Image (cartoon, rainbow, N blue to C red):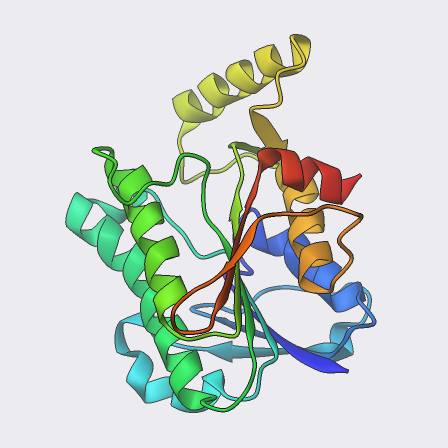
Length: 236
């Protein structure tokens, strides 16, 4: 059995993803690397090991990034939470890319499947900061040298708990928007539980017959992007 690493397990998507991974027979051990410890008392809790790191000083935590076969990354923030455009890029992109490079450096001869939860509309050439940053992350992940990189591009995220970091107005507005999408059966949104199920299944090879266009980059990395439709198909 394999060892999985999850980055971002305390987030809206990371929480259900962690539960899925721990319940999988594919992984003998699951390591959560993050800034704070996660409260988990569910099935297979004995498989979970938590390592706390300072993402601003990752070189001090090299040992936390050794020995993985599959890496699930749901790290991310917003400009509002970060406080500025510069801090948003430093966190949203910097934490992901710097940790990914360290993982590759610490496991130079190990084939690793890296799965990253990006966003619909990600485009490195976009004039929108959020979309451009996500697109840049996708591109740079492909250049690091992992055996395989899977990118997930969900639409609006429907969460099952109110997010205190977003504020009352944001939560109400998003709730109304998603409610309208449900009413008119417009699948521009996805529940984080559904998203987590899809990411987990792809990571363990349960493709549910879903096929995506995969390309081999110059460095040998198998690179693939899964869009909203793929995610719904995987989670069925």
